[in-house]
Length: 313
Image (cartoon, rainbow, N blue to C red; front, side, top):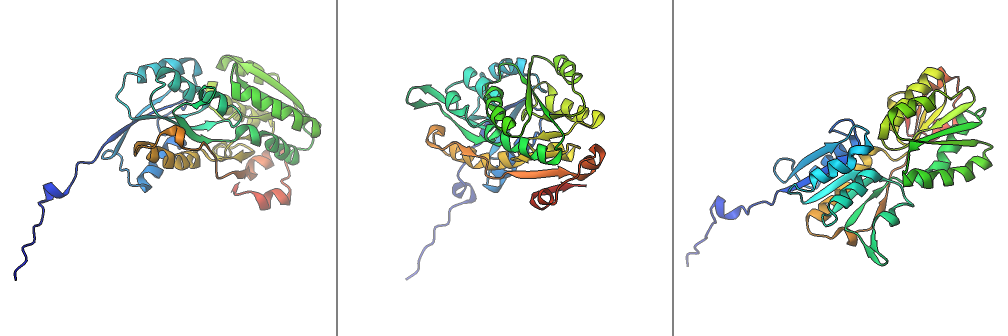
């Protein structure tokens, strides 16, 4: 008996693919911030091809936190499936401008997350993401800097005024500083000009603990002063060590974006953000710039050399 095989035409066999549009909001200085690059790479690994399955509407404020709210408000009228943010200010601005849209964040400190993601006593907002564990890692950064530069006695912490993450981090730092016989000099600032005035006050024997976010270009200003005035500085990510910073301890920006891509994919496929756990960064690296150590007259102990994942020469 003959069997008739019915083969669908190509047009019938290919179902239309849904294309998603992701808004991106951060304080970066250019569109290809490492967290965004990591997000794109992670989504590509999961089968989301840029231009076919997903497109990106990228907004960045070049370190100007004062206009983040305005940029977020401008995004509120766009047809977006979700918003991806880097930093607390961007996450909060996105939520305030459009509280009903799913948000996936990176580069947000650990202890401040519960406050930012609650819309009621027992209700979590439609937000999830990857915490940089910035507050938790702060004391360890102090310890590493003191190990490399044992003669320092004051640590400057410059941060955007009213930054809740920074305020919480300083409380954690003060306890560790006391054990290490260090003094924390914390300075809230409102502008890049104020950052420059504060940095003019540093002197030999001081050190820097740079913030995570790019607000007012504080990390870059600290890096420049560190190299010019030979002030030891510790950063939150290896990006700054590759640019000449002495040492960093924390999650890589790119890795945070890569990790967040899994959450983004689940949200795009229908999972509610509030049903996904907020994750801590799963890769914490120690990086040391040996050339900068020589410039600053810092002898890197063998135990640090052996432990470092990245040695910039």
